[in-house]
Amino acid sequence: MKTLRIGLCGTGNVGFAFAETIIKSNPLIKKNYGIDISLSMIGARKGKVSGLETIPVTKDIQEVPLSDDVDVVVELIGGIDDAYELAKSTFNNKKHFVTANKALIATHSKELFELAKQNNVHFGFEASVAGGIPIIRIIRDGLMSNKINSFAGILNGTSNFIFSKMADEGLPFETALSLAQKEGFAEPDPTFDISGQDAAQKTSILATLSFFKHAVIENIYFEGIDKVTPQDISFGKQLELILKPLSVGQLSEDKITLGSFPSFVKEKSLLASIENESNAVLMNAENVGETMYAGPGAGAKPTSNSVLSDIIDIATGKIFDYQKFVESPLASSFENFSCDHYLRFIVSDEPGVVAKISTVLAANNLSIDNLIQNELDREDDAIPLVIVISNSKEKIMQNTISELQKLPEVKNSISHIRILDI
Image 1 (cartoon, rainbow, N blue to C red):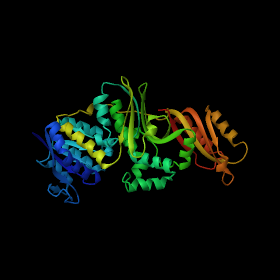
Image 2 (tube, helix red, strand yellow):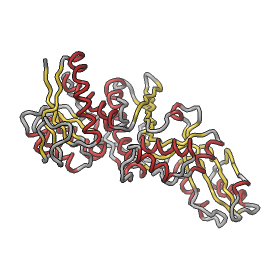
Image 3 (tube, rainbow, N blue to C red):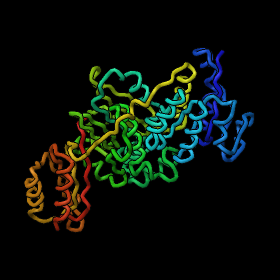
Image 4 (cartoon, one colour):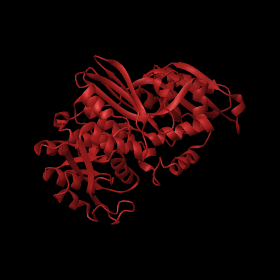
């Protein structure tokens, strides 16, 4: 029976869950694949790991790829710098490397893909995007014969959980965030999730694989989720729209558009039904049309399952060459991204306000598709006003918002949410 020895670096929630997964899944893997996968070494800064006392531990993770008792290094420590050094050392020692670290891939994919190829070893990163959904291998193995036209997805389970709780329970953003932290879906420092950077990193990885060009986070337009209010979600429901944290990639006439931001989708959209910490990716490919993949996007067990699937690839002799995906740089622009737009104002409760706003819109060749003005929400001689703008390019919309913001009748920072018909 073939054996594969794993050196695990990182024993936090995901690392420990991965160790448990190997132990529990090993009988099934032996039966189905004829492979004995075992943990042979652990790199953990705190030393001995409770529950895994029989496995040798080093406090220096950089020693793991140097061990003769390790065939595959699994990196679950997070961060970039230490993980980057660990990956380079692993490849240079001609060992396979598996990670769940989207920041590492988004920052250093080009060099690491090339290094893995030079040393004829496998680089597995299924767990870096969409948790338990095997989206990397779907693109790599299932859609490789297709030209991918676009993707759209919910790639950050924390953001989706927050929006779901705000919508279902009427919670303010901060309360929903605290609940996500309590449930373990958000880190104590949730900056990467709520700023949109986590989703942007994942978007860059999907873009690289989908469009065969090296995407970096600088290619991605992204926004955070912390400016959205329960009031926006409520107005969305009146318009039969559901708020989701979306990441998109579009290829049109050899031009690529990438973005990650809060967006409304129609109630009938497949993505509208994806709730709480779940993720989903909607792919549009030349030969198969539109397909959607959904599942758990956050949590230690789904991530561990994806890590283990990469290890089984290695055990069965799969060494995939990712270098071809990063041979050409990706150029992108968000200025011409086109969709409907939701704008929420707090305006003076006086005659002629809508006419002034309409004049600005008309001057920019924009038309109003829908308007909501709720008299019951009047407060201190001001009233909320919601306008839906028909299909408009991003550059025009941003310029228009800047002009509208200067009107003396507008009392707030205008809330702007894109509306995607997907």
